[in-house]
Image 1 (tube, rainbow, N blue to C red):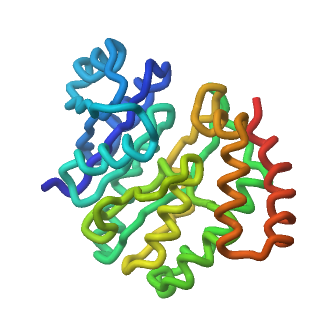
Image 2 (spheres, rainbow, N blue to C red; image 1 turned 180 degrees about the horizontal axis):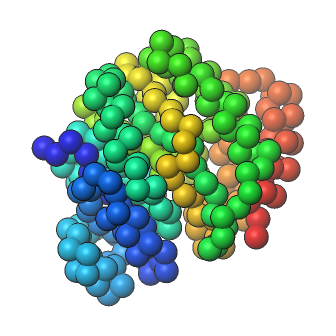
Length: 261
């Protein structure tokens, strides 16, 4: 079993997939990479061949949970980063990950800060980004970030963790990793479950990840059909009474506008 694998979840014919692959090929520590898809096509196959990356095809209808779970199980490694095809990684991502994995053997989750990319341009940091950094603050302290209460404290006011920036320790997270029936809040629901288990959440506030927002990505789709709003309301209702949830969602809906365009 390898120490770490980047498992790219590829869907359709993304014009950004090659940039994702190139960012992983440029890691300062040689990266093991696999491509996983439930929508095999010539575009994905040609890129797999061009960059000599193993390609694995999942049978069945595409959906986020099953695609992510397939990628996680297919990655023959203790640590797996489920990379999204539209995003990119800083060349020191794996180097930094391994440094902290060796320092903290009980690390169940590794995550980092990120830079928002709108289309092809870097976006300025806004209030939403700053609020998320504040929410992640409890995870910055090694003498606390193994405690269940501290891990959950970072998650009860929203999900400040960008899911493609995450690496999971499969020896600690268990199988299956993704059990939630939610779609947009699948990662948030998963993190809440993992917070109740043994294992440290390591958060590095260096922007080692580039998160791309564009018209056809899953985040925009979930915003347009109200899935995001419905599922976030459901998640907040687990922690707060109705009036508090309404107040939180009022501010969240205003924040959605930061991701439009």
